[in-house]
Amino acid sequence: MSENNNTQTENWFETWFNSPYYHILYKDRDQTEAEHFMDNLTHYLNLPDDAKILDLACGKGRHAIYLNQLGYDVTGIDLSENSIAEASKFSNEKLHFKVHDMRVHTEEKYDAVFNLFTSFGYFENEEDNFKTLLAIKESLNEYGFAVIDFMNANYVINNLVPEEVKTVDGIDFNIQRYVRDGHIFKEIKFEAQGQKFHFMEKVRALTLTDFEQMMEKAGIFLLDIFGDYKLRKFLKNDSERLIMIFK
Image (cartoon, rainbow, N blue to C red; front, side, top):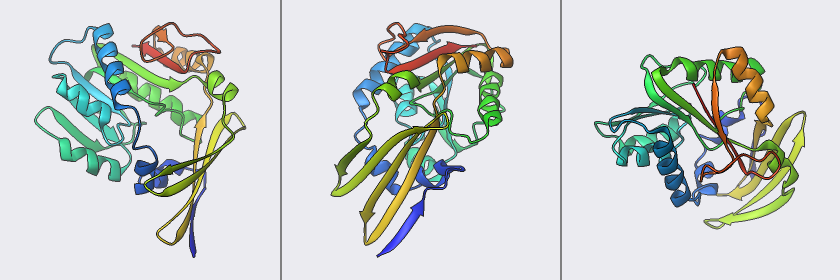
């Protein structure tokens, strides 16, 4: 049996997010919850009916597709060619997808830039995370708002499940989680089609303080902070999410 080992942490996301197994493992993500979050967020931001929204690191486009169904003009960008190919099947006149590196700002300006579901803090180099923040700021128009929906690192670390097996489509995904060097790691091992696979996810355990420091350096104004998808108050140890509204 051959082994496919993709545990290198440098740009781990380029291989894992392009793998069909990534989409199998995460296919049961709660769509209803995601839609309620978009309802709450667009209502809170009071976006104009024809607002142009950029979904940054859009994956296969689940948020972008729903935002478009609400009537918005949406562009989804992601580094993963595989994800963009899937998302592009849903393209229309007001829904576009393209492969793009989120460290580089877009030519066009948007009424809102959304970076959702912990799609930040992937980069090995701290400067790259800062570049992403700057790119978000530079992609906003004069009246635009940006949103980063990140994990609450304190909550995640305090509630970390060290080991579990998740079976999806007959594949047993053996998952290990641990914290090291200021990062949260998730190792994923499984067998499929006569091959052994080993992937790794690695995300910087950024706290609200870390974001505040980066934002101050970038000249960004943090306007509001929420702790869950119902936009309830952020509690440092108890909230599952860290949702930041800024401009």
